[in-house]
Length: 78
Image (cartoon, rainbow, N blue to C red; front, top):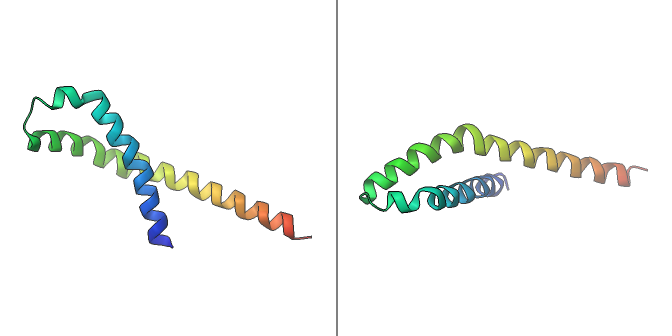
């Protein structure tokens, strides 16, 4: 279950990031060869994923899980 959760976190972080990058800079990047486009996209997306997006979504989902667990515990604890 832990790998599934990690996969979900990476997916919800990377999908909007790639979509935003391509929406903002796609037309400009299309003028360059594929290897330069890939270099530009990964040089921005990988650090943002590692240092910002994945930690953010991990914290959000952890807090959400804790609040749900606490709510269920309170509901059935008596």
